[in-house]
Image (cartoon, rainbow, N blue to C red):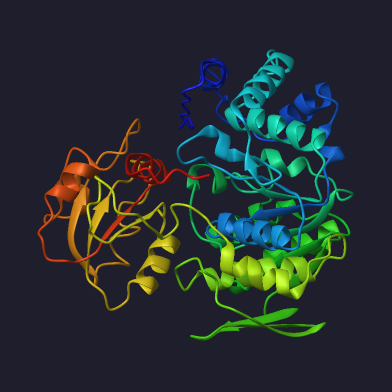
Amino acid sequence: MKDFARSDDPAVQAQLDRLAALSVPDGRLGLETIRALLARLGDPQGRLPRTFHVAGTNGKGSTCAFLRAMLEADGKRVHVATSPHLVRYNERIRIAGKLIEDAHLAALLQEVLDAGADLSPSFFEVTIAATFLAFAREPSDACVIEVGLGGRFDATNVLAPDVLAACGIAALGIDHERFLLAPEDGTPSDPMARIAFEKAGIAKPGVPLVTLSYPQGAALEIERAAVAREALLAMRGAHWQSSSTETGLHYTDQHGEVAMPLPALPGVHQAENATLAIAMLRHQDRVSVSRDAMAQGLRTANWPARLQRLPASPLTGAREVWVDGGHNPSAGEALARHFAGQRFHLILGMLANKDRRALVDPLADSIASITAVPVPGHEYHPAEAFGGEARAADSVADALSALPGDGLPVLIAGSLYLAGDVLRLSGALPD
């Protein structure tokens, strides 16, 4: 599956066309290609400022958003790398608080693509090489880097201990089974333990590895990885504690107890992501961030298409419409907790390689109707995949216009690609 990208800037589009032509041979694993590409570029990954590296199945992007907001609230200049993009490829590379500009992006991509033309790098490997090159050339106080897929073989996992402030692992769940659960000697057979094994591949010697709490098998794999790599494990439940109430967050570690406001990002699951960000900052000593800045970051963090309420627009009218890119069972459970006791209409677009029941089953008690829509540019599940009562519509706009005028809210979910298209159509572009 390619990460399609389009730009209104001809110079950027010319490089995105080159990116789109790249392919990865089936079965290629490892970091050899990204290391070779970065070596030709002068190994920029070794010249980054102090870096926070975040893996996880769900919540890693939100954790990165909290880290960025907290660091910036402390007056820091922060570079941020996230994926995938929702509307514009530029969203993947944020330099000192701003999305990379088109002219800079076009020149970077050309430089990287030219340097690695004979290496057959992947879309993501070129993206990460360009990102690290940009971050190494522009001074800043800190970097926040989101893992793309897995951890052990992710292109971001070339980061060395001397640039890392802390590594973090967010919530775990089953996703990307073709890659992360592929049979391999010496890896765990239990699916959740295998996912944990892959995520824990980002652990580095002497670097704090800060995690949430997990089922026993998954926790054991993370503990083993930390010991094998001589990382400084800080797991919730063993090394730090957190809880939330209707009025705030409560966090405790060896340094004491901290009371924080609830995060502004909607969804009860965001309390976990917020406390992981707090724990990552408190378990490292390379970047100082005040308690007040942490609190301010919780209030100001922004992460598009994750339980985002859309503004009124020609697409939505005055109706209450939410968009979320969730597409796996863990995301379905998080959405179910948020909408517990509420009824809503579900507009669902899911890639054909995703679990068709991942959202429908956890949300069953809240769904008033299901309308299946295409995911533009991708193969997707048809309406019949979601049960006999699911309807089909040719687009999100058609799905919205066909809903009854009953005043119930609407959730558009199932794919980040669909979410990005909805943001574009509604004018709520990520900035």
